[in-house]
View 1 (cartoon, rainbow, N blue to C red):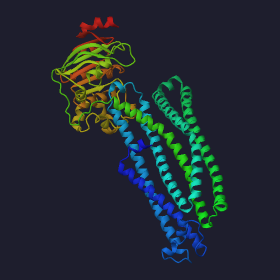
View 2 (tube, rainbow, N blue to C red; view 1 turned 90 degrees about the vertical axis):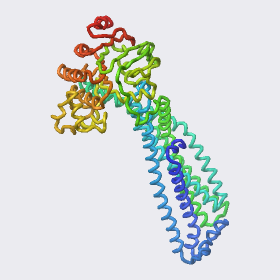
View 3 (cartoon, rainbow, N blue to C red; view 1 turned 120 degrees about the horizontal axis):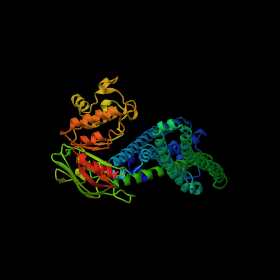
View 4 (cartoon, rainbow, N blue to C red; view 1 turned 180 degrees about the vertical axis):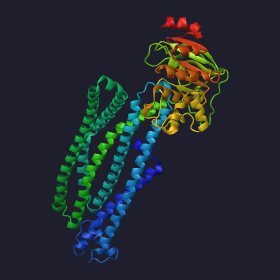
Length: 577
C-alpha cells in the first residue's frame, strides 16, 4: 500500500492525511459534546464519574451558556457536524483525485516502459498480457488504492473515537481496545488466503484477455469452420474460472463481515454491563460511550472489509511493478526528440553479425556480412525461418545483434545511434497496420506535420489515388484494421504512409504476397518509380519483384549463401529450397 501511495506527490498525500485527521477530530468532538448536551436536556448538570466527563458537563458554564436551555449547545453541536461534513467532502474529493492521478501515472508509466523496451524482449511478450495489465490490473490497483484510502480514513476516525472514549473512561476504553484487537487478529488470519485469491484473479484476468484477443482475431475462421460453439465453450471455461475466483472472495468477505457484526453486538452488551455494574458510570457518560462504541463497531467492520479489498487488489499492483521492472531492465538508451535522423549517402553494411534468440538452438543469423549500396533495390529470399525478417530488423536498427555491427556510410552505430537511424527507416509488412480512424490520420502517423501537398505526393507515389474516390475522401474512416478496404488498398495506404516520412531505407516485408495480380502490379509499379530515389529492401518470393531488384540475397539457416542479380543466384535459391 505504501509503495502504491508513493506514486502520488508528497504534498498531495500530506494534504489528504491532514483532512482525514480533521474529519476524525470533528467526529470525536461531536461525540464528546453529547455529554454536556445530555446534561442540558436533563435540565441541569448531569452526574459525572470521570475528570474529563466532569469538565465536559461544566462546559456550558465555562462558555457562559445558560444551563437551563439546550439550544446553545445544540447550535454548537450542529456547527461541529456541519464542519465535519464539509471536511469529509473535501477529503473524499481529494481521495478521488489522488486515486485517479495514481491510476493515470501507472498506465502512462507502463506504456512508456513498454514503448521504450528493446524489440528483442518485446517479440517474446504476449500482447494480451500487457493489455490486461494496463486495462484490468491498473484498474484493480486504482480501486485497491481507493479502498486503502478508505481504510486510512476509517482507521484515523476509529483512533480519534478511541481517544474520546479514553477521555470518558480509560478502563472501559482499554477493555474495548483489547477485545477489539483480539477480534481483528482472529479475522485477520484470512489475510494470506485473500492475497492468494488476488494473485489467482490476476492470472485469470490475463487468461481471459488472451483468450478473448485470440478468439476475436479468429472470428472469420470460426464462422467459416462453424466453430462458434467450440469458441463459446472455450471462452466460457476461462470466464467461469474468473467468476469462481471473484465469488470465493465475495463469500470470504461476507463471512468476515457477519462474524465481526455478531461478535461486535456481544461485546457492546458486555461494555454496557461493565459500565453499569462494575465501573458504576453516570448515565450521560455511559450513553456517550455506548454511542462511540456503536460507531466504532461498523468502523471496525469497514476497516476489515477495506483491508481485504486492498490485499486482494495488491496482487494486481505487484504484477504492475514486476512488469515495469522487467520492461525497464530491457530499456533502450534514451534519445532526445531533437536528435536528427541519420542520413544515408553511400551504403548500409553488416559486419559478421550474429543473432541468437532465447530458447532456440541455432542462431537466427550467423556470421553475416553484406553491403547494400544507397538508392538501390535489394531483394531477400529464403525458406521460412532462414532469417529474412531478423535481417530486416537488424538493418532497420530495431534489433541489436549479439555480435557484429551495423554501419551507415562506414560509421558503426551504437545503441543510441540505432534509435536515431530508425527515424530514417520505413517499414511495410504483409499485414498493414491501420488505426480505426480516418485515412488522413492514418497517414499522419508517419509525419504529423505533413501538409496537403505532401499527402497528395505520397498517395501518388504509392499508387493510392483511390482515396479521392472514397465517400469522404481524406476523412473516410478505414474501420477496424482497415477491413472495409481491400487488401491492395490497405497495402497502398501503408506504402503511402511509409513514403510520407521520406525514408532513407524502405523495407517491404512480404508486402505483396497476399495480393492479387492487379494489386501486386500497382505496388510493383510504385516500387519501380522509387528506384534510384531511395534504398529499398524487398522480402518476398514473387518473381517479378526479384527480377526488378538490383541485387538478390539468398539466406539459408541464417547464413548468406548467395548475392547478385536474380539470374545469377536463382540456381542457388532453387537448390536451397
